[in-house]
Image (cartoon, rainbow over all chains, first blue to last red; front, side, top):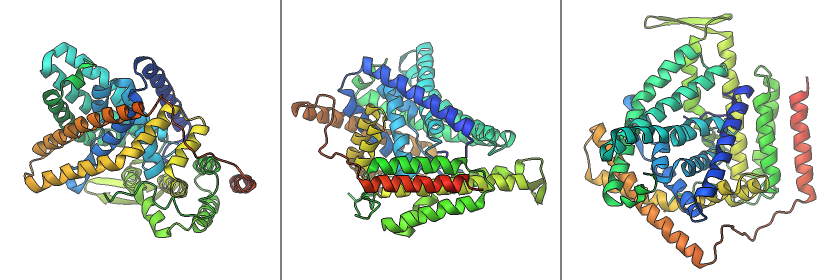
Length: 210
Length: 255
């Protein structure tokens, strides 16, 4: 759910733009120290990969369809900070080229669907993986983090809209979180499928981050 | 490959296409800020912005139908928000109706909120559509770079643009292969298959990225990308920016 322009009031969108901006600046500093120039083509092609993956629609109840976000998957594959840059770039391109999500709401969209999945989701994944251990722990970690990232994205989206006076929180929050609790299951199954296949075919690609 | 949809019409040669990309980026970003900050009841001002966008659109010679079709992208989100409008309590009631067991009322406040988001999001989408349909994506990125968007983001976006067509082609081929083999409608099964498809694409993409990097290094890539294109602001660009910004501030501040 990309928030268009005009849905958020100035306090909300300015705050979210600052939050997302700081997140991106921090991610740039982190990736500069940990990754070399080699990562730039990789991150660029990965952005295209995630965008292409998002084009696979899957049906949800009632004739509507949803698509994969991929924030947690990106963080598992690329590490949290490189994934933050990749996801942010995708939202910037979607905003400019496809008008999917507004310019002023860009910070909110990057935070909701990007940073929550790539940073928060990543640490949930790590936590679950370490406490369960083994391959099973890794897959459960990916699944739980992916589901949580979708539900939290919807939750933050409705809180931001309610804060702006666009929707009433009492009605919107349970509805949005409820619907996305279902969509999140789809996201989780897909993410687990991706990681399972990579574990089988190219396990070396997953080793760098655990 | 049939996906030339990213910056369609950006290679037309109209007067708007020829304006310096930086000037266009600044103008449309300011315009969106002004639109978003205009109080919702000022319908006359919104008509002013619309008229201005329409004139720019006609000058740019982009097909009107294309732009209006593109602007429908906001509809799902507008509808989603509209669902919640009747749940706003308080304020003067404009009408009420019964839905199942709920007695829903629509207040004037609710209508104003709806009008606000509908107009603002639509005008903003029109602005961005005109910007990206009159500017090549590479020029847009270069303009953003000179306007201090971090270089890493610009580089990622330019690689994105270079490879997105290939990858979309690849995923569509995988999708065709799936559709011609599988007719199971069980959703859990479908999700799993989508996961494997994406995993497959990931591995291929990763290997592609390694090849790309090696090819670039062997040609002397050192972390910076140079382009032959350089921007020059001429007098027309300055007039364009100055007069249009004056007009939008005039509309915004006029009472």
